[in-house]
Structures are given as structure tokens and as C-alpha cells.
Length: 321
Picture 1 (cartoon, rainbow, N blue to C red):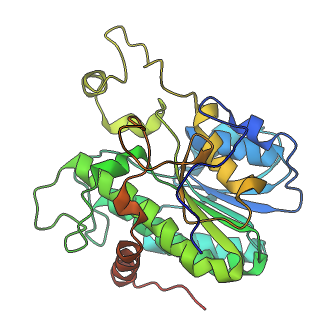
Picture 2 (picture 1 turned 90 degrees about the vertical axis):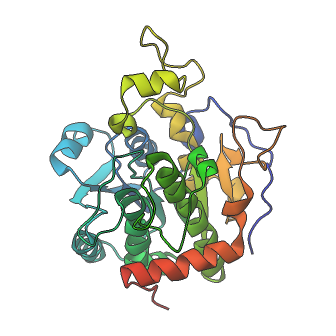
Picture 3 (picture 1 turned 45 degrees about the vertical axis):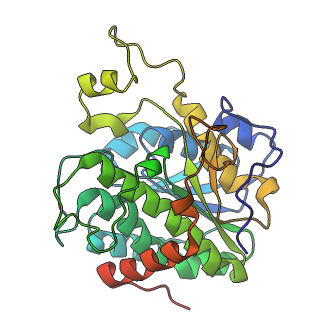
């Protein structure tokens, strides 16, 4: 069953790094898959999990860049092409993965785009929703037999964001066909969908010992901001007039820590369906949590079920078994 959405005692926090989280953790014999594991916090997620002994598969939209970043990194790391906005690419990637491994112990749905101008995939779907949510929905469905094969203790980590507070999730018009497109509400919708997907996935996976978590990694300066001008980022307080990053931002090593914590922490054994931040289960948003926390709509089981049904309709994909 879904765990209480309330913090627990954790030895890690806001400034913890991914490598600190895996210190003493042995993932030898485990197989991990990380989407977008060659940029920003994805790179540090791969580095930490590989350093703990896991065999890591990285899904990369730009394999050449992935090799430039990851070749030479310590550990067993394989790179395979994956474009989450292309259904055929997702299916081909999953088929190749299934040829290589018999079980998948940890899946980190990390890749994302943010606040992009209106773009559509080949199906006509809005790109943030298509890439961040629908692509990972289809990928997880295709990998479901491998996750099932891994059995109890299997974990799926879905990267959400504090951007979920922007909401904007409209299941009647998820692809902005009847509304004037707004990039930030569209991002909020996609990130809300990531958290709701983890909530429903956990409910379905729990009987099989598969638990799912959603994550806010924190504010971090990464290529995720590629669609934003420096003027926009200064206006939001991310950079000052001299180009210095906000002192409250995390490093990429710190930004990867909560994803890794959700993937490996024994404190989360038997738990799932929760939204996490700063290496802990997040508290409900409110006056006591002014800069974070989880908003009620992404803890709504009925909305999570409705999103799941809509995602099946849009992708034509259902989870086997």
C-alpha cells in the first residue's frame, strides 16, 4: 500500500551527494537503467550507481555525446540509443535491453525537457508531456516483464520537480490542442504526471514487490535550462546580474542524491508511492515548507488512475500481466 507522505529519519539531506548516499551500498549483481544518464544529474546518478557495483544501461537520445561523457567512467556502463519522443525508438530500445538482460532491478526515469517552446512529436502530442511522461510510461510498460523478473526489492524512480506546483494537468486537453500554449503550465503538467505515474505504478507494482517513487532533485544549473534565456533565469532569481548562480542551488552531485537515495536506501524497504526531496519523503507543501513540499493533486489516487487510463489511450500501450 502507499506509504504515508511524511518525512522519515534520514542521515542525508539538502547538501548530501549521490556518492555519499551509495557509500557502503553494494549493488553487485544488480542491473540499473537510467534514461538521459549522460547530462546533468543523470551523469552523477550513473556515476554513483556504477561505483556501487551495478551494471548500468544508459538510454541516450544523443549516443555520441553520451560516449564522450561516460566513456572512461569507472564501472560497467552500456549506452543504447533512445528517443523518448519516438514510440518506435522506445520499442527498439526496450527490445535490445531485453536481449541483453533477464531482469531489471532499478529503473530511473530521469530524462526530461523543460519550458520548451511549443513543439509536437510525430503523433502531434505536446513535446514536454510526450517526452517527460508518455515516453517514460511506454518505456516502463515495455520493461515491465524485466522489472517483474527482478522480483521483490525492485524500484522505479521517476524524476518529477517542484514545478508540479504549477499544475496545468488537463486530461481533457493534455496536448494543448484547445488552449493557448503556455510553456510553464505545460511543464507543471508533465511534472505532475511524473509524480502521479509513480503513485499509480506503485499501487500496481506493490503486489509484485515493485515500488515506485517520484523525486524533486532541487534547483540545479544544468542543460535542462537550455530553452530559457539568461534574462528569464535572472528574472526568476536563478542567476544574479553578474551571472553567478543562486547560492541556494545544488551542485549536480547534490542534485542526483535524492534519485539515488530512492533507488538504494534500505530506509525505503517496503515503502513506495511517495514524492521525495532532499533525500527524504517530502512534507506536504504549506507555510511550514515554503520552498518545497508536495502539493495535494499529485497525491490524488483517483487522478493517478485517470492519468493512467488516458496514457494508455494516447500511447496504445498497456502493462502486461
